[in-house]
Image (cartoon, rainbow, N blue to C red):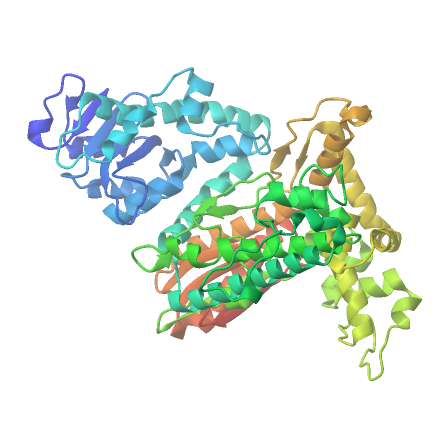
Length: 632
């Protein structure tokens, strides 16, 4: 039954019964599970108002015209930790309700997140409410009605709009019941609970935003663009100096009144065009299919112009993604409010509008996010999170001992991998005493960097070509380094091999206990590993099987830490603290200056507690920091 709560003159409906908000609250407070949804004037929660609020279950749905009726009476229900509130994409509705009703949500079930947990790894699967309604209930929902809420002004809702709003909550209850059956079948209850709780923390981050120093950003953006143009000029010079590329040189150079002759381009290549660049590179490699990074990186050692082009692409991406265009993301409150995608293939988080997960680690960019006067950033990240996860999974005795004793893992590894070469690498004046400490003399630093790159590359499925590019060594040297590495640490090699075999033979892989998130390989079928025509797909499955448990377990840990931090702050309102960002293993808060020292210790403790629930060895430590600017 649909009940409409609005102005008296709008309540005479033959499709919706008249109802008071007190009656709706009385019904809802006695339910264990309720569907919740909102309709708004648009997608910007800061400026586009909530115009409709819907709550109910399969039997009864209450539609409230929030232009005239406050939903304050529902506060205790929405903030109850006993009543489950079902929403689809909870982060959006959470922000809308918090912005326009000053009410937060607790104890939620997000049907979108549940579907992503069940089908993690499947591409183009469809996670919208319309997709789920058809998949579970065989219903075709008309979502076009949603657009009609944008320009309502003072007009009353029509039948289609009220029925649309009611159905959005009616179907949520049925879909949740069916989802939970599959969740139980695949033993994903804990990971779903984690994601639902973490969604509230991510929603807080999206709501709070992070303040930006616009003038400072503009200066850095200008310098980044100048660097990209410099690399473009170097590519032009490389073409001019290579006789094989004669056909790309301009026969005539068109001048103008404003550009000095020496600054005029003398080639006919648009380096931002992959099609044109492909024609250039086919001069050297006729069979080259595209200029994607993975395709050309293996040729970068042999052809310096390809190496230059890769650097140019990286610089231009920096100049465009994090240049002047980035400032379009600054909202009316002077802050950046990103939007998170909680579950990628591994369980790691992505963000967009803008992408804050790939913001340059260089502090010159991050330092443009400045706390207001009287406040500071209190941030913490996990020290060597992925290395600790590898150590726990592989049970490698050397790694575990080094991490337990707080020694320098990369130096110890370099000593074991290089042997006598490491011993002979000391430069004059070297302060090196033992491999248990970090040494910055040139010889030791170079070998340590090589092994450090392999250590971290294990979590990303790094192969010899990528390693060669990163370290600026030959492919043969990279292959030799990897071979030496696994000879020195056979248990790590066996651990990764076991993960790869599991994924190839079973078609999925999981993260560590207790969450055991599952990632499906949708191209997998029984016996695929024996098919010669599927070697590429098998290789991709094997690489994903090796890095997903490492990256995904790290993601589980950071999400659990976010949950613990949010719950602590809710229980201790005396702390003037906001969670403002998270990037992989780092969590950032803005805190009142006079509380920073106390909060710093509490935050680190909460993160370490989260780490210990997954890595009970206690290897993982949190490294907190206080600064007036955002830092890596």
